[in-house]
Length: 207
Image (cartoon, rainbow, N blue to C red; front, side):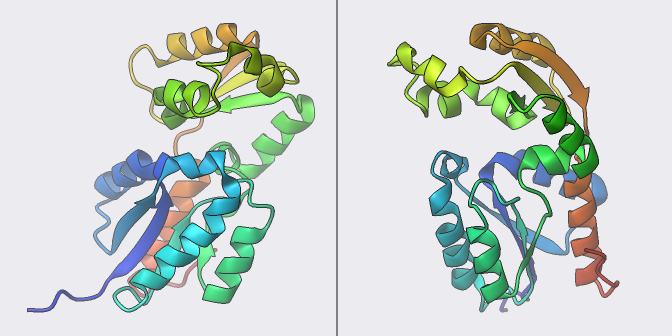
């Protein structure tokens, strides 16, 4: 028997854990999830083409899709692709914005533009994605080039594990930044996915 087509969420790999957790706690079975590599964030010019490719390779099987990405440094290129493909995404410039909420994030950015943000995912993979991904582990002299203009680190926590705050404090100290902590939960990402799940089931989609 052929598998009945369902809706699909194409997600950034940095959100895989959070999307899976939201599916579990909300009992969402209306859509499947496929993730793109989180390393794309180190090369944001590759995000839009990768999303387009993933949409097109799944178009025949999934007539309804949603993109669990913000703009993520693509400079509008992702939105251009999504307009052409007729697919929506989570609103916001970065995952930091949709976790914190647009109003709160804007206030934080205005208060101190030189802010480096951690999420649960980035905290768990800081060494691989930041220190190794940017080459700082092999070339420590690069750290001031990447972080010299930052003043503070804010840990935007979704569902932190034991010891997470202490680990984040250690990263801030390592980078020479002041430290702040805020619990955000899943923020606007949860709202967007809830609306998509309800839309798939025939409820009006509130973007």
